[in-house]
Image (cartoon, rainbow, N blue to C red):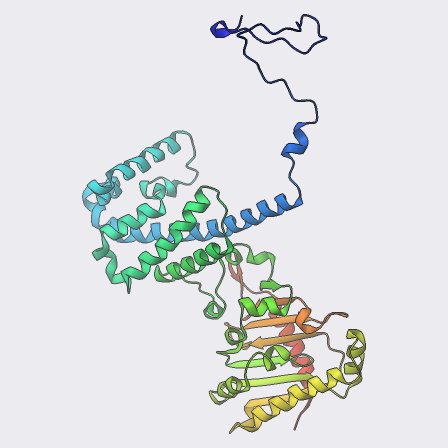
Length: 412
């Protein structure tokens, strides 16, 4: 007899001590699965692994942003409210600031702090305080309750609250390990960057105005020199980084390639004219459409004879028409070279600390539209987890451009 006067069922027939008949009133127990049966049911196929890795990557990016925002908000709240409450309440200033409305959650945070202290979870003495255990919504509540104290530091309370509202959706998803869509991740990253800017923690890299410093780049940028983005082709580049964002505010533009289609076909001549009239210096270096290098490139791509040279010539003619409308044609230089083309590069504001570059290598069987694209941050400044260091690829391509420019000849 088993527990509760229930009789255990017999085993399989043919085993010693088993009976073929089951007495009435017995409870049937599940029999163990056969060896090997559990494997196929729990195994993940390639699609399942791909999906879970995608989820982890998105959650990881969102967590980095949320962590940055929470730490910055914690520092701001402490800087503003501690001088108000600490002189009277000492170490209990957070409890006093929370007041009766926040008594429950601040006491819960204090309890978690005590447990963490006893179990040795507090590895950094700087975290041995109640405010380090407050969550993002609780920090927000402290700001809202004491907004007159924070008002001198912010232009608009509504902007701050809207950004925090957007982040709350992501925080809820990430904290519960749920699936995070690409759209929600993008919204969270934009809201985080906007909120960090409001909290006075914007990127100190000058080029961040054109190409914002991503949270992931800020942490692992030293692994990838000054490469801040890689796109499989030019179409994907332009979806995330339109030509207007690349060239629209340029003070200086140096470009080298075969036909410079990224500029000529995606940025209007009228906009280019306005840039030059506003003082921008432009140097465009095309492959000579009459050179043997163009013919070799046509054969590589399987193009008809003269097709590529005509396309390059049309682009040069278009740029000449733009230049002809300038009062100072010297600000808009066009030259051609005869060497074998190795890469195309668009160096924007390469003479300053806020420059960026878009670079593609030429592949034997792929046109420029289909080749992988690197986006570089210029100024010889590389964002790393230890700060900003001097290194990168930008200066390499800039030097190559200057060498090619020196060996080229002008187009009249």
